[in-house]
Length: 362
Image 1: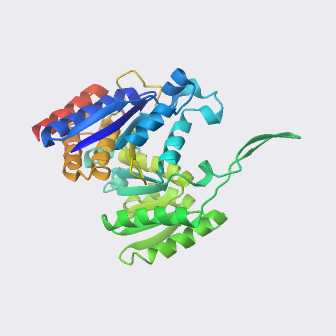
Image 2 (image 1 turned 60 degrees about the horizontal axis):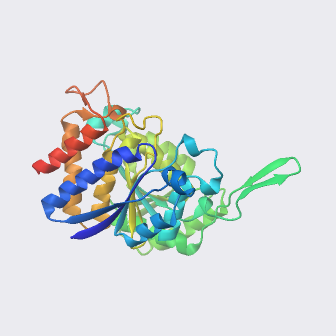
């Protein structure tokens, strides 16, 4: 097949991990007879430095005209003093909103050989394999009114949590459909004991569940869910939740896998999907060849599966990652002194090369 992929490296470690994912995609294309066209564009802080805007019109146009988007990371200390409406993170919100990407899929699966890399006990996290389905274009990040205003005794900051029935229905359907391909369990996470928006969320999700009698539905308040993720992560299959809660819980789930550098994500909902690691720009290690490229490479694998229905190709990347880890290769973030055989420490580029090497063997 032929596919046009918009490549948005972004900021921090984004430009370092992105080439590793593109290298993997090129290897896949060669092996399976596909043709991928990569077109680069600026986004986030890099775009601000060049154009004064985090999401230039040309970048948005490219995204709309592409078959899929691969994004590295946005943000960094350099741009923290800017007004909120022009900060690098607005590029992500803008892409999600403009492209109708309402569903964010964040898998958290522990590779057995990385159990000791987590700060949690191996016996607690072994067997973890869950999927966070996060609503992406509603909730407190987009609700109005919002802003900071002057008051008689200082200032007042406002953000509004808003959800409508159609928004909840469509994200719930994504979760139930995903569960049907997994272990057929959905955990809906809310704060219905306090928030009216969550009361509506729970009621609507229960209604959608009637169309999926083969899927078991349960509910947790978000504070309890945060605790249960640490206490017994194996109990979860698919978690579906709001924009804010999903943002927090998926990062927490990342630590179950040993490092946030291991987790990919897919943002879907329209004809163009966007795929990115969830680790952020990590400016403190940018340019040092320390970043873990696995999350970005795994995001490329999700792109192959979700946007192009190339499941065999996606599985080949997943197997290559597994084989490299089985051989003891580690970036700094997933290193552990307890590993046997002894670990082989590598940098960003070498980890990418090793994974592509394994792909080549396949």
